[in-house]
Image (tube, rainbow, N blue to C red):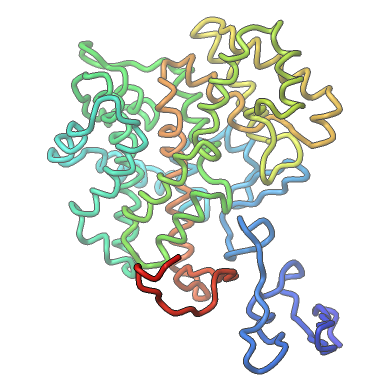
Length: 430
């Protein structure tokens, strides 16, 4: 008997099965189909709502150890990339697998900066939305609309075509986001300035008014770049799973990414930092924190920004963002919400109730405060998340396409509804 197997005994029949263990960490769900009570039986399935313990793919992009608080892109620790790299370099790393040489980086930057413009018709498309419409709805719709401007995007089996669409999406996401923001304010659209950095150009499209050239604050420009890096990928989260699932139908990447953006829109995913800011405003002042903590324990309110589906330790991204917050406030001035956040974190990390449940601050806890200090409206927070996550979505999408084991996503279900029954005419129904 091989050591690399799992011995399963079906107590219903007394039969024993040898199930191979893959990579010393998983078993193939299809191997359980052989376990049947009789020949007419469909076979055993694995029931796992929310994929809490089901691996849907093999990936080489992002590694997370939630117990130890580790996050790595292609093997590189997130803290090293945040301190030493730029977002575009990290985007290259995530989508191509290795850090670029100087020549490769120059070419990559050139490709991105020369795809930043949108077709003029898309300006009218964005302008057609209500001004009070949420920017995420506008961004998701506009990204899907891009597929009608680039019919070549359907050539997903062509490596050159795939690469071109990836350039387009990485380049155009900040432009789409900025146009959605300006539309909500009733302001004119600002075209990309390709002499600026990726983050500097985005700030220019957001905040430039009548000055001949917008000069971004270098500290805020760097902080935004780091935030994009921290959001670039996060393994098989809800939106990455959506990108892979929609993409598995072999639809073009614009429509697949529109699905991912929609998944990110939700308050349990990309909208979480928005919820944190609302929570801090609700608390109002530090003196109200003890009462708020008691309400959390009674489950009358939720402690937003604490805890994570994967991390059972301090989110490594939260550590970096906490340092960034102080850099931002040196530029923008103090923020009373930061004082509330620091005190709330201190109390929660010392309280046995939260410690026992391993509820530590996550990436959303401080990011919302930083965004507010930088002048971003609350509604734009998930859009900022989406810009950084574009790199990860595209890498996940291409990895899925090139994986010979991947098929169109089609989960099984456990049917507990009615058995067969005959139709009853309306006049005979009780």
